[in-house]
Image (cartoon, rainbow, N blue to C red; front, side, top):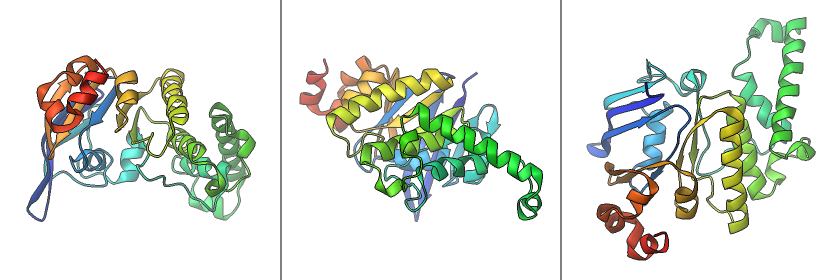
Amino acid sequence: MALLEVKNAGITFGGLKAVSGFNMEIREGELVGLIGPNGAGKTTSFNLLTGVYTPSEGDIIFNGKRLNGLAPYQVTRSGISRTFQNIRLFGELTVLDNVKVAYHSLAKNSILSSILRLPRHFSEEKIMEEKSLEFLEIFGLDQYKDELAKNLPYGQQRRLEIARALAAGPKLLLLDEPAAGMNPQETHDLMELIAFIRKQFGLTILLIEHDMQLVMGICERIYVLDHGQLIAEGTPEAIRSNPKVIEAYLGEEVASDHA
């Protein structure tokens, strides 16, 4: 059974179909790419998967459960985490506190125990801090734990955002243009990081990305959107030689560069 099934999903804004007839199936453990030109509907599709938007049509089924109509925090609790095209860290909080925020969304202690500062509150806080520090160490960010997030270099901010997404304990991680704004060395490091966290955490990953070297280098399958509709799906080899994809997005030069 697929971990994620998207069946004829679509959404309309003011009479304009932003995404329509979108079908996707991702099996547990896969690393899948979603590509297409600007305005193709990629981020809109991520917003459908994560509860930011409710589909106007179709179904989104994750781990056997229908997600239509769930709020983003409910989708997160179901096992889906995401990063954003524009980094959304809490810049005025420390690096450590940014990761602890994700754990708070899963906390089991009641609001009352926090207000009254009961023993359970302190024991959960201690566990959260220890787990957050473990994540920072895995991502090579533990030395920055007391720094404000906004003061980190750009590439490190990306790593922190991914660490925070993983702290919520997802089965499926959605990465929205993780290499945006990165130089070639940072992109190379990111590819290694994605491969590492996939193996380390047993993750299933879906990513949007414009960097074709990254996409073709790590994705097992790729979906291609154009004008809100799926125009192709297949292995990197099949996608780079697909005439529709070349015409809509890759271009002859890019396709031949990766041949």
